[in-house]
Image (cartoon, rainbow, N blue to C red; front, side, top):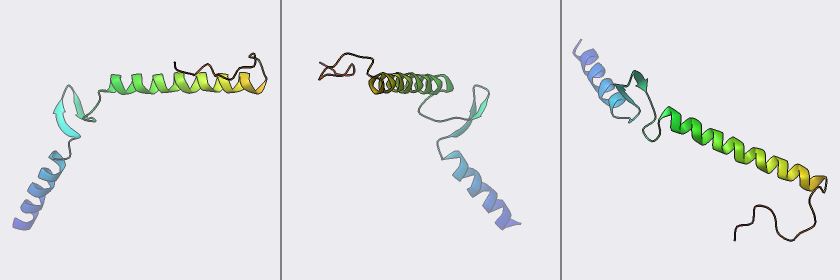
Length: 76
């Protein structure tokens, strides 16, 4: 019985020290770096950027833009 109690205490200490656990704001687990809203915003920005690149590739494939040595993604 003492071993079980020791195991439970050590297991609880290990779980609470991982950085992704703890009660608060109605959530049981969350990532320590970003809130759910911030993470969703990151994903939406990435999808937007990937979509713009896909459109750029499609236009380049069908030669829908005038010839140039620079791309529309060039940063000055």
